[in-house]
Amino acid sequence: HSNFAVSMSIKLLFRFIRLNWVELLFIVILWLFCLAIVTENNFVAGALNALRIPAAIVVTVLTIFFFIRGNKLMTTGSVIACLILFPGIWQYFRPGQAPETIQEEKTVSDKVKKQSDFSIAHFNVKEHNKHLEMLIDDALQTDVDIISLQELRPEAGALADSLLRPSYPYVLRAMDVPGFGIALYSRIPFDSTHIFNDFAFPVLWANLSFNGKKMHVYAATTSTPTSEKGFEKQRKEFAYLAELMGNPATPSILAGDLNAVPWSTHITEFCKRTSMIDSRKDLSATYPSQSMLVQLPIDYLMHTPNIQCLAFTALAPSTSNHLGISGYYKIKKR
Image (tube, rainbow, N blue to C red; front, top):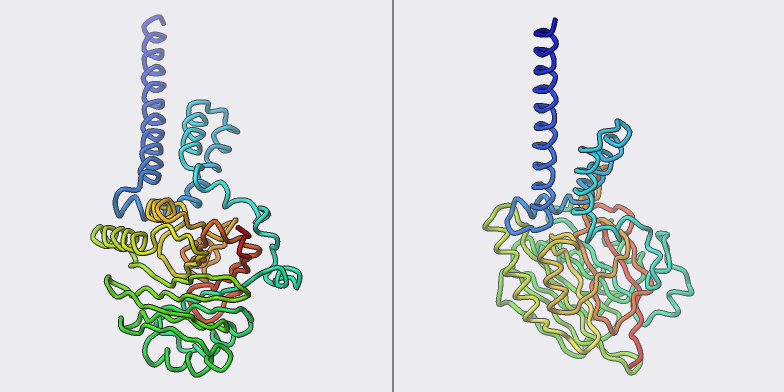
């Protein structure tokens, strides 16, 4: 009997040890996964980081599951993983109720419109959009002062121009990159304009003045990082854009599909170098527009600190695979 008891005790001990090694391995893998996301120094980590919010939700569910099961080791490991993941994304879980975002609905109040100095909307129209006229109609319905369009093919650009120019007579377009044409349409006159063609995609710049105030508007896009080479290419594009913009003293707005999430290394480094601020105060995801599970916020309206964002929203789905975005802004007094 004593030999049997010893044998069983040894078996139980090994089973306990084996179980804990499995748990420990799971925790190590989970931590390494989370650390790879937050460090984001290569294409794979960057792709994972784009999904950091869904990953954080899954890890949170695991934490609750292990807590209910009474597994202290796994609960502790999952909590630490949550602590690694949540910095940088926690603010996107809450509704947009920060002082600079005062509306949550799809429509903007008349009060906000009267308080604002200018408004702007941005649309990635989708390169092969067969129903572009419907999207342009949606753009016109926003009734903003400036409209930014991207992914325009030459024939699509011609159609958009014919529909928008009657209401937005001041136009700046760059159609040099096939399928990636960029355009700005404005009710406010352009004092001066320039198209920068020194890198992969053109960057539009317009100088505007109204009511005794001056403002710069930039429109830009970056490559989609689908490989390690693409990841590095996008990094160089952001570096170029940051160098081009500098740290603008004149109130400035940047509109564009930047193909990176707000918590990514590329975006955070760009904002540090330029002092640009993302207008969104909640997730306001834009791509893919038809997805019911995972959407990523990769379209932007950024502004300098001397501009206040009064309202920002992702618009209702249209005929593009991106949601449009719009914002209302007030230039701060010096």
